[in-house]
Image (cartoon, rainbow, N blue to C red; front, side):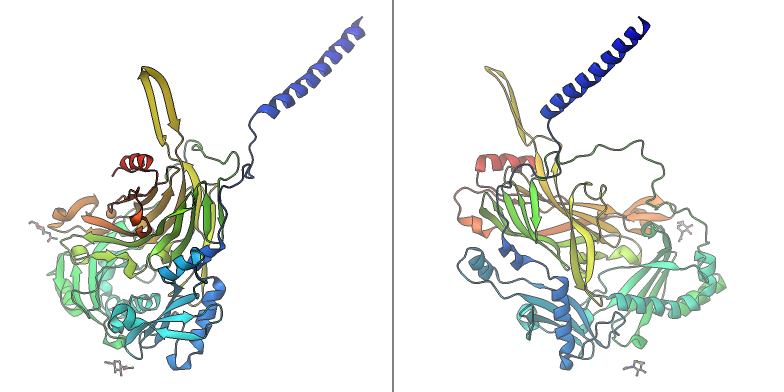
Length: 555
Ligand SMILES: *[C@@H]1O[C@H](CO)[C@@H](O)[C@H](O)[C@H]1NC(C)=O
Ligand SMILES: *[C@@H]1O[C@H](CO)[C@@H](O)[C@H](O)[C@H]1NC(C)=O
Ligand SMILES: [Cu+2]
């Protein structure tokens, strides 16, 4: 009896397990399947012709570099420590083919335009800058000086941007001409000594009239968040000459007081006729290290049925959209031949300039206008961090550049592309009058992103492609504010953000280029450009939807 009960119990357990397995497998078959593979085919096809817009490959940079080095009459160096008085190959970049030629090619009416590169040489020996067009790639045989044609004048050598090589020279110049002559002041005011240094930040423009090349260099504590740790010391260096022995200190600013020479500051400091800054330890309040662990993981988005977009070469497909892309070392990210439902709605959409204009009572920021394209924007597009800079599951793309360097360099994962729910429906309506009805549409859009860290600011650049056929160009600024040491009168030019630190008043201007001229003949079109901190641009053929999309994009 006892064993019969045991057997019955075992049988019951077995049957129940089998029944469970059967039921679970039946039901799991009905639940939607997650798949990292694309479940539905793409609507459009990739276009090899997008390659006319592609940035140069590593091999192409090398071909141009080798070709330029072979031109013995140009006597070029590619070394980073090339002196300003020598000839330096500063930049190699894609030379965009003429639009008319590209359109002919894209529309199948003419052959592929010749692929060419731009090469910029700082001719220290001749005292000018030259821009060459080098071609045809992949095996260049010619270089053409296009400086006059493009700029309508000679470019004197001292309008060149400050290279890494010159930054290094300026640091040793300051060491010799300023720091080593003010040992006591440096120690007492800033605790600068054997193993402790200050960081520099260059102000712009470097002068007030054409031909000037003099820079107010402000000093900051050697912290990770240095931009908000000014120490109250700034030096105006004239570095006009390509002969570094001619460089000189023109003025100094210490604790709000000006001096004409290092000697004058030293003498007045020693004699006690200067209001001294006394060094005080400070915590690195500018550190970006998280102060505590996050409570738990934040929500994540994932592709339940694989990605609805595809990246091949420099071409992207997404639902009804297709476009080519690139990242200019100079101006930044750009897209070309932007099509919606097969129709070209924009030839080009690109970042062109990021300017910030400051005010201050102290030298450093008094006249400061940063025109970031003058030091280049795209060259500062560094690796993006998965899950922080872009969603974890985004597609990441490497870029290659040759600017102020000795060899082409790869920047891993410096572009990201992802589709994202934008957090609001694209459109919706609920009616409770006469007709009870509801209609809404999920607003899932494709984001094309780079982030450029230019000095203190990090600009996050997005081109967003909506299902409605609108495109948005958007920029966010993050990173650090630019600051000055607090002196009497400072507070008229900003707010105090820490002990003795002024966050300076300033304005940002962002310029985009939007080439829509193909659209101008269209009977039904709507385009809008707004250049503000946030810029939106909408273009679409289905006008009704387009207007709604544009209006809702805070225009
Ligand atoms: C650089 O300038 C110094 C001082 O003005 C001069 O002695 C030297 O000869 C110059 N060097 C060159 C290469 O011109
Ligand atoms: C600022 O002004 C106050 C009074 O006007 C003066 O006592 C102080 O010394 C000044 N500070 C500096 C750094 O000039
Ligand atoms: Cu700002």
